Image 1 (cartoon, rainbow, N blue to C red):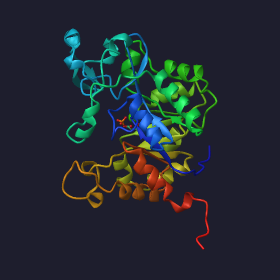
Image 2 (cartoon, helix red, strand yellow; image 1 turned 60 degrees about the vertical axis):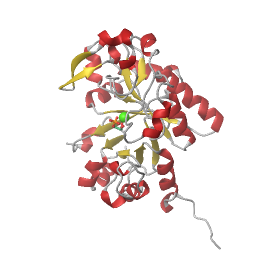
Image 3 (tube, protein in one colour; image 1 turned 90 degrees about the vertical axis):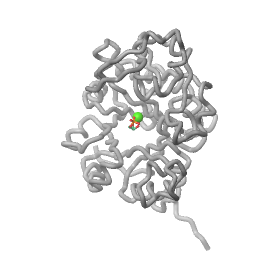
Image 4 (tube, rainbow, N blue to C red; image 1 turned 45 degrees about the vertical axis):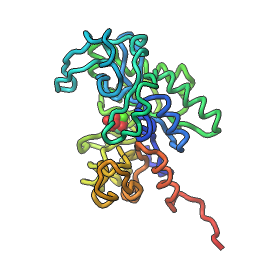
Length: 317
Ligand code: G3P
Ligand code: CA
């Protein structure tokens, strides 16, 4: 399919996780209020096969599970993506058990202001994320996109908890089968995307941490690539090559604190102070990217709205 340029999308990464503990309804709700076009739930499975929003199956760093004596015996070590990980894992908990936990800030050293929300918000199900998007869409009168990611799909498939079928089933049950403009489904694993391409016409996005071998091959099942921003810095020509292959480009992940910005966009010496993230967006928007995953959606909305090429010309007198 041919690439068609559009106004770059603002994707609320894990919601608005620069301001709220990630992957909570409150984080997603704030992303929408700040103007994000899409909210981004990463999805993993519970022991009873329910999709919930977490960045990884190990919930040690993003919940208060360590403070629950009743779950002390569930702490274990597993091989995840070739690395030993010790913690508590979603696949060892039922949804009812996970509901007794509360979210905490992942980066308390960088975002101490967000720790005031520790212990207040639950882990949402994918269904609840869709319910929130639909309710906010009705309330605000604008489309709210949802951009789910299958996390560790091979790991979950090996446990008999494959993510793809419940993901597509949940979207269809909620009337999203035809909403090709408002659902984007992403994964780092090509096999997960290929599986879903046989289940749905919804648009798929191949995430990239390493340079792609063959963009034309990716275009046979994907609408877009989602490269790490460092990949594009090393190879800016990838944007034009992706477009030529019919693929949009959605780049990740933007964060406003100096610690995550290139030296030329930092303000002051403190790694936890906010820098000039607009400067970083402008670099990538000038490359022609089509979407920005950001922890601070308000800043990306400002950068995109300032782009002349996406604005209706107006007379200034
Ligand atoms: O999904 C895009 C971006 O979020 C990939 O990184 O690790 O935050 O899921 P991660
Ligand atoms: Ca993600």
